Length: 221
Figure 1 (cartoon, rainbow, N blue to C red):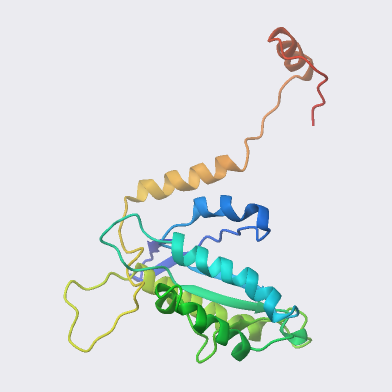
Figure 2: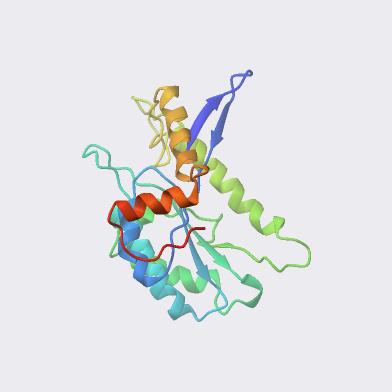
């Protein structure tokens, strides 16, 4: 995420979402992109059997707790984790059922207990896209929580913590400030990654490929 100040002095946060493929064959490559300064949202399908979903969810909880951490040896804080359950109207398990597994898993991954973000007293943020009354009432609690977490991530931790005052363990993970030019450079690289539009003469290109010793039949799109 990044922040920019407005005329009123407020800070407007800009969040970017990275969608990791959940298929098993992508599991290990995904870990390359894990870092300790984001908000991790894990999804499970509530219309499936609990044991089936817990097997997948357990892996991702372990991966985030184990790999999503700062390279700075002095930073012990970990990024927050939320669990979202989709297809809630056709669910085959409830939040309490999953909570039993999650709390048992805390014994194996103690750091996860402070990372997991609760939906009031529930371990899940349920979502139902086919609700005839609309999806907003399902998304609202999740959106509100993500907004809260984003603010906490960019809020610096005080050097001296007053007695009796507790701060979220992830507070300040993204509080370090960088030159604005870096942000503009970041945006430029993102736009370049989307591809550069240009035109080229087809016959000239094929001729250069042949002269360069590139064999084969070419089809241009």
